[in-house]
Structure formats: structure tokens, C-alpha cells
Length: 364
Image (cartoon, rainbow, N blue to C red):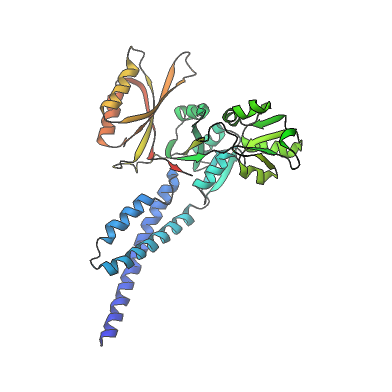
């Protein structure tokens, strides 16, 4: 056997071994795909991918071969992602509103391979996941201008779902009207209460009457159906295209830093943050009716090395003048320090609930 034949034989043997290993790798990718589907986690994890390529590339001694091996790794990872998307394709994702609403836009960007399911309100979307009708729900939890979404906060406190991911969507509000209408024709604007609040200065400055709708897309649809040149909707530019409306004015929100955080709710809690530094967690709790209980709880969190970014209170509802607290902090709740903190908090809290743990929020 000459040198060429020996080399070809080595390639044939290696390819057979690689085929077995590739199948084994894709089976692991399948398991990971279903894990992510169950928890509402994104297919693409750039930090994990970068770390794997750096670690595995270091195994190749020849720098020239190493460059080709990096390309081989990237190609293999891309194949895994495509396979996972095929597996997850059709996962039912609940959101509140109709096509064109900001929640719809967020859900579509987070789960481009998912089957988006519209619900009339936050409770219906949340309960669709609790009942198993949907795998995930994408719901707003906070706006940078008007604060937390109280109804969703209450669902988080009362319900059984976990938050496994959070994303930030920049909100750009626009004035939409039927074709042919001019800005001078408008006397009334229709939109979701939060959108009206975000555009309060613009509305009052023009002397418009403000009318509430269940969401921004519903407002746009109602304006299109009414075909009244005196009524406009406040909604996204995407919504104008959906309902055949004209954008009379762009970026009418008071704050140009306006953004909404959307959370992905799932039945199963994600513990992938274990050992990661770039992660956050959310807690909800009630404190004992004793002097200094809340101060003691906050002190426990700080003394355990966790930096709080939010602390809010909401009325319990079932008891007058009683409150529950929502807390968000940086760090790994599943670490030894996090578990020790939870044990200490239990001494000061009547109820303590870990709502979620997730990587640092990404932008949509």
C-alpha cells in the first residue's frame, strides 16, 4: 500500500469514527433542545459557544490546522442549532394582545420558531402555561418610564410559573391614523393605558382626548375599522403596516430611553445559572409582623454579598394594609452563598418564593 492509499484509509476510518461521534453529539443536542423548550430558553447561547470554541481549539497544536478546526467546530454547532430549532418548532408561546402588539413583537423575536398564541389578557396567557396549553408565556414585567406591570407582578406572586429569561425591547410609540388624515384632523387618541402614560406630554400638548384600549394593536385595529380621520392610535410602526394605517408622527413617547422588559414564563425552573457570574434572580416574600423585619431581610441579602437592583411592594389584596415584596438582585441564587442567604431569609419571612434565575437580560 502506497502513502496515498494509507492516508485515504486513515481518512475513511476517521470519518467512520466521526459519524458515530456526530450521532452521539446530536443526541446530546436533542436532549438540550428539549430542555430549552421546556424552560423557554434561547437556542443560541453566544457566551457558551465562544467558551467551547476557545477551549476545544486549544487542543490543536498546529496553529494552521487550529484555524480550520475552529471553522469545523462552528459548522458543527450551527448544525446542532438547526437541529434544535427543528425539534422546538411549533412550541406554543402565549402572549397578551393581538398581532402587532409589543408583546407579540417581543414573543416573535424571542421565539422565531414558535407558534405564537394570542390571549385577551395577562391572566389568560399566564394560566395557559400553568394548564399546559402552552409551553411558555412572554409577558411584560416592567417599563422604564411607568414602572412595574402590577397585574403581572400579582400573577407572579400567586401563580406557579418561573421566569427563566428576561429581554429588553425598546419601545417607540407612533401616532397612527387612516390614510388621508392629517395631524390637524386628530382630536382623539386610543391606546393601552401604559402607552397613553408614556406619551402623556405629547397628548396634552396637542389637546387630544385620550381613550383606553386593551392593548396598542387593538387600538390600531379599532382606528382602522372606524375609518374616522379624527381618531388616531398610539402604537408601533409595525402595527401601521398590519392594519393599513399611516404614521402621522414618529417617536412621540416622552422618554427616548423608553423600554419594556419582557419575561419568559415556564412551568419548569431553570438552574443553568449555577456557577455563572453574569446572572440575576428574583424573589418574592412577605415579612413577619414584627418591628424591623423588612430591614433585617434586606440586611441579610447585602451581608451575603448580593447587590439588589430593585425592591418593590404590592398590596396582598386578601389582607388590608398588608404587602408582599418583589426583589431583584445580581448573582447566582443556586450557589452556596445563595442557598445560605435563603435559609437566613426564612427566619424573617413568612413566605419566600424564588420566582426565577436567568442570565443578564438581553436586548431584542
